[in-house]
Image (cartoon, rainbow, N blue to C red):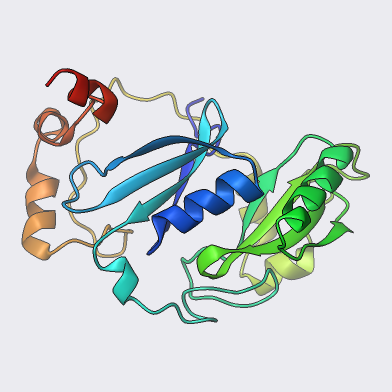
Length: 234
């Protein structure tokens, strides 16, 4: 069955690319693997910090980012227990493989002068909590040797489900999504339906995108040459 199988990258907005890279490399030990002009976005930079071969935390810097004022409780939660606007990132949790690694990460973060709280044990994971630059709310967690690994058999609370408007029949569907194997790329772009999620573009641009054949859009928008190879060929 075709479905997403991991997080490829999470892209966060930044007004200070260097400070974010400094923090994620020095404080967390994540390797910088990319920093380049963002494809198709004039004046924007894209940076990637490696988690593993297939997963990264990314940052996007546009010319307007520094002009936008973060608002606690709106754009940012500030800590894992506070609110932020629907659709925003409430907090980011990164993985380590053992309880010993979790404590070592706490030591590393504290050694850089950043306060850390925990570990807090949640049954399915143990976590430490701290802040990152630009009001990021961050967590490092491990699911190693936990009492109750995540499972829909024990981690779905009927009371919470009911408050969310989720019925027992809904839960059955959510626990077993319908399989899908693809259609050889032959499914056409759907007609515009305001009840469905849509990316935010000027209407004339979005209408043009919706009407553009997939092959034409791929050809027009793709850039595959890394900056290191592009400069070497000049």
